[in-house]
Image (cartoon, rainbow, N blue to C red; front, top):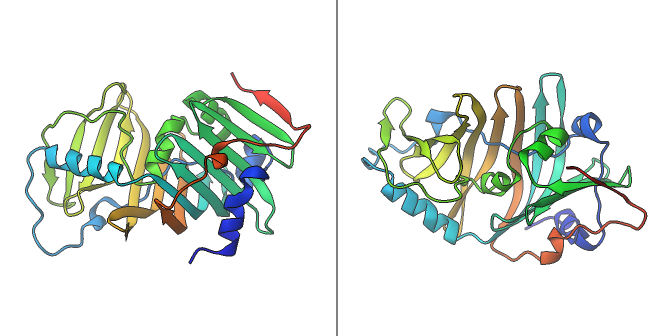
Length: 287
């Protein structure tokens, strides 16, 4: 049963609530930054039987494509922790709404029910509403915009994939060789998914045929993002990771996402992804 608070927060589409001081003040408040995943490679497979022996990714890609088709939307309540070299913060109540992989809404609620921020990303743009400052920061949904606000250089289009335990492929790679790592009891694949220019490293649970970890690797070989999934739970045939950790190794930034309540495929109002703010709110375009 979803809490009364949860439903009240989701109904805020017509009464925007958010806010938190900008930049570093926003971070210390527990701020919103998402890019995640958490799983310690080996521990995800606890099945006693031998895993299916696969030599290519064909069956894995087919399974993940079918999983995408079975998902339409998500509503949930989560705890968000942001860990930085010089500090960080925890936000116990973060409301999330997703429509497929195209629309994202995140709303931070403070310990006394006060709105801290509202982040909406849709149609290749984003808006971050800070009610305490009566200000909206908006612009193209690019890694450059997000690194300025949150310190994570991640494409915003990747986030909806991460929050449902998916691989953020824009198109599926062709079937290729897959390796079984006996010590970790996981499958491993490395390759590209055009048109994205970076490489992926992916670790896959051989029983669920789901990713438990992936890395985005730049052309230089530097790991730009390490995402880990764990604590998997099943909802009407769709398995979802409840604990997600995202790490940006070169800056030592980490975001940890823990779902507390989740509803899958129960409908999401389009109004949730429209940024409505009170008259007189200052709007700042980030180019």
